[in-house]
Image (tube, rainbow over all chains, first blue to last red; front, side, top):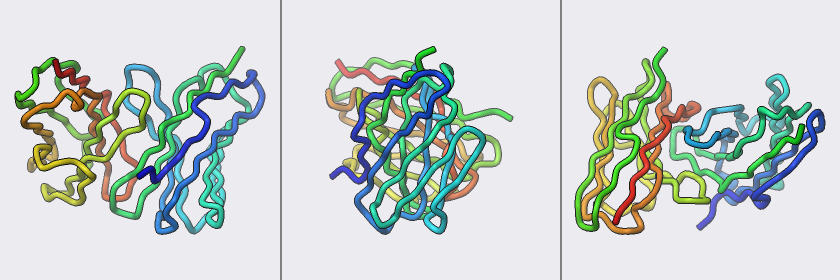
Length: 111
Length: 112
């Protein structure tokens, strides 16, 4: 039973443009949402998070948006850089409990 | 600050064997989680340990078991290995339950 879905397996964006990665979840009880970035042969690296009491959290070039009514999460990267090319996973959790991960979106930023 | 380290990096086993994977948590982290990542999939939660006690378990059979030690290092044990157990096993530690998890680079387990 897939709790978290990332429907776009891949995304290509021109350098300098905005990258938008999307994630949908099924359970309204989730209250903590995260994005991770993964390079080949490395473990996922934490990028940014948001709790259910907020609808936006910004950290430099990265902004996460949460739409609780739609059970939708997105990550905006602007401007996109070639070094951002990686697989991005969204993750959701109930506070203190297990994290559920999506299947990932492979982002390619074209120089 | 030392990050999360896992050993071994790669491992090859045969069906029916048993395996132990090890994880050293990031300094100061009291929570560790283990994940299984199959090819093309996201990490699937196996279980979490908090201060040496199991704090949640995913949909994995009892032949997947774990331990967390007083120094917060951890082991994942898998008995009666099956072909479908071939995957990348990731360990992640966090400062506390519900905090962002910091991952190691994983152990690639291949079952022949």
